[in-house]
Length: 260
Length: 181
Image (cartoon, rainbow over all chains, first blue to last red; front, side, top):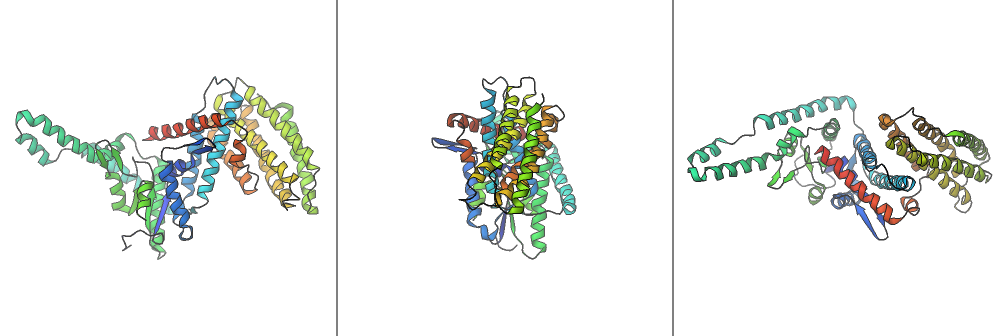
């Protein structure tokens, strides 16, 4: 795709599970409302999608839909408590909240285009993506080291300053590779791998059908997809690798919205 | 725990309703004789729902999942009842009969899943299977316009209680993602 400008005509936004969940967790009542922490940026992205329904800007896959329903049920089950004073009331509240959020999710998915995926083609891409994450994990283990220049700076510094210069270089190293280092402990799950594989598969399918599209993956998952913001600053090794290898742009919902 | 007579009676209620609905579909006309049958079904479902919440020996997760299924069956029956009552003025005749007929097998199957949980044949190990049957039930409720709206449903509980539950749910989602991240 030649154009670097994102328009609803030349782009597709694949809504990932975390964004669908964030936009669905809202229970409102006359006195106020309770929302997920990423509710506003996620619902604003859905507003952009709704505005561009005719261009079918927002897309979803069966994997995302099923994952989102599974996550919602796990979250409700996670709120169960033993020894509540009134179990009947407690169950009724939980069941009501579950139904409400599921209804919100149903309304949101109704404005997304459900894209089918070819399971056979996916298997191969799935394998590629799995190996990409494994390669990144290996890089995190072996290659995150101070540069030669950093070593030279440390050696050249006075004994008094050496510790401070080492700390400064180490901080930059940690900042730039924070996302990569997190992969060591938080491996991409099979469903995360599958969702990225589906985004790649759909991007390729649009290209093959003569209608190339920018493929944007809207997510709040900063381990495996979007830029990780640590207290030292942003880190995007994994995000950049995905874009460089597959042309899939993973970003936070608010950042995706800004592109249009 | 077992669902006892209420469960048996509910299956009977659903069978009676099916017979009436087939007649309505053939005649192309709603028959309000179905209302007492729905009322009977609702009182049997409510009895099961109460037994679930009174049970003290059952595992909490399985107990709640069975409750959620049974409560959704009850909500469906309530919505069905209100559609039959207002069928004439809403020009819902005979669509409500067709929708109900399509939904009854799903209600029966869902009730069987709840029964299997209650008699221990399905446990929380089978969570995936149970949750997917809940999704089938909710999807069928939606596609047959038998889904009670969230606002309507929320009117039955106190705002404070629901707000508290909303908070807990938002925290649980955050926890789920932090476990992963």
